[in-house]
Amino acid sequence: MSNPSDLKYTESHEWVRIDGETATIGITAHAAASLSDLVFLELPDVGDTVSSGDSFGEIESVKAVSDLKSPVNGEVTGSNHALEDDLKVINADPYGDGWLIKVTTSEIPGGLMDVSAYEQHVAAEA
Image 1 (cartoon, rainbow, N blue to C red):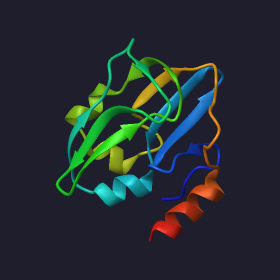
Image 2 (image 1 turned 90 degrees about the vertical axis):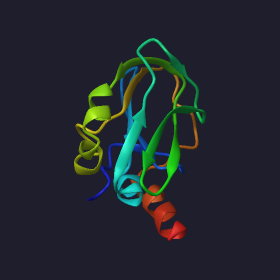
Image 3 (image 1 turned 30 degrees about the vertical axis):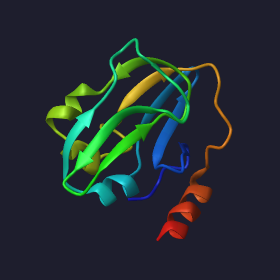
Image 4 (image 1 turned 180 degrees about the vertical axis):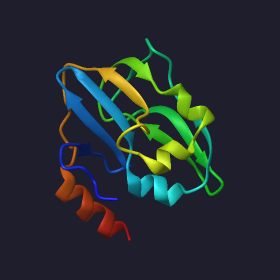
């Protein structure tokens, strides 16, 4: 699965789609494939605040437990709790129905990668 060019990416394999003041956040196809068989997901509630670089939840597979790190600061306005009952959606559609949270933000921090830089980052990790 190719990485969409309209997204920004983090070194910890989250993606963010910015639409005005709304940031939609998920994990990349690479992260979903690396984790493979997901068994648990913990997401924040609407109204919680998140900070760039800090954990906003946890995702667990049969292989590992990983913190989910926010690429932006802001208030959670949407949390895809439906995924907690159907984790396969994250692997099947990480850039669509597999989104994790929506955040209202007024600033986009530096350090986010475009698709080319992210793909180089993944290749360097291999």
